[in-house]
Length: 323
Ligand code: RRO
Image 1 (cartoon, rainbow, N blue to C red):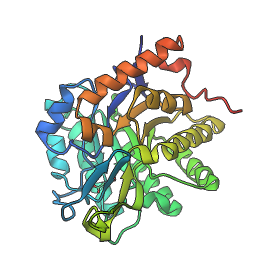
Image 2: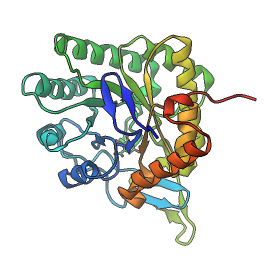
Image 3: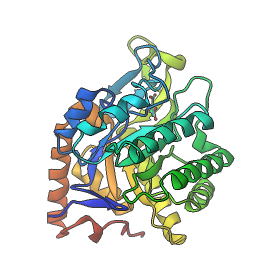
Image 4: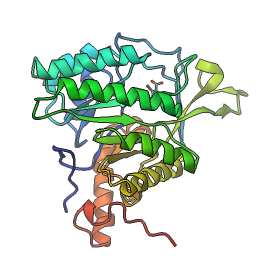
């Protein structure tokens, strides 16, 4: 059974890795992922400076999923550059900025660490969809901003890496969209730019879970409002993957799709690939189960594929039938 996949020139031994978010902030956590069967190591979204994040409690989960308002706690982007050498598999730095200028500074530093100092950075996932920044909206919900950010990001990326052979793969992490015309507009904007992948979806922003016993919220920041993940969001994640798959197909664009949102079993993984995902990320379930989830989900996916007589993921990727 072949579960490998690739994005541009970067090859992955399997199609399942961690999502940026849980347990990928500290070196020990990144090494824990490196020693697991996760096919890549993705860092917590990093910023220009180190951040403590929002007040605690800021994460809660139940049987159906999770809610978080972490507020981007991370060690600062230089930490993730510095420790890249210690990771032995595809290493993808997730990053963002609180303004376009700041984002470009972080991006430039990461790229220069690769071109000038040969740091082992295999990919960059730019997070345009953090739902938990107090007083700020999600960039990718503002289409004019999305277009402008992508223009600047791709300008910097192409210029700095012009003559560099093994470019880090470049992608963006998107929020869930809920309107067909939003898929159309986002699809049209993204298709204009030379990015390698999109990751969809980030958590569903501004959700609220209630603790009935205490008649209270379950997390502290923003009056209990936070990003929803886990099973709650799987149908939304599947729809986003499917809609972007169709958008890129229609426009003849080979932009790979990383599916994320409520993957707990091999069956969930199969569904995402059937909808068009090339690679899958596990967030909430990784938080709950730790690195054992990668092996288990891969084993379960192998069972589903065996039963259906598929030998590799390309045989059913994107081939969802409509009735
Ligand atoms: O740190 C967070 O609060 C956070 C981020 Br950056 C994100 O992209 N998605 C999320 O659910 N939480």
